Image (cartoon, rainbow, N blue to C red; front, side):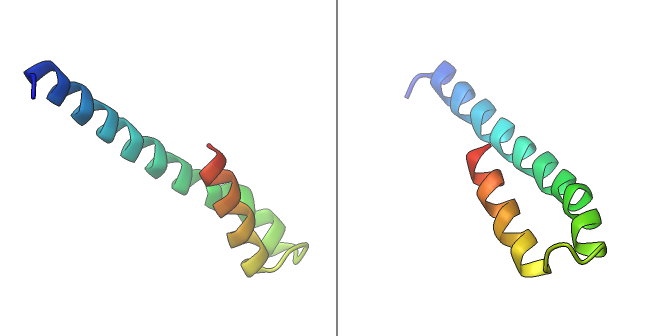
Length: 56
């Protein structure tokens, strides 16, 4: 495998993990008010968060 291809794959993998981490951190802020006010249950919040995390 070419060295530039390896760098590209590593950069894409690190970028993916960083984006996932940032999204996972921010989803708690977005769902806390809805769950705290009892508008939705924690299970519903997990389902909603999983769907939108998957969609990007």
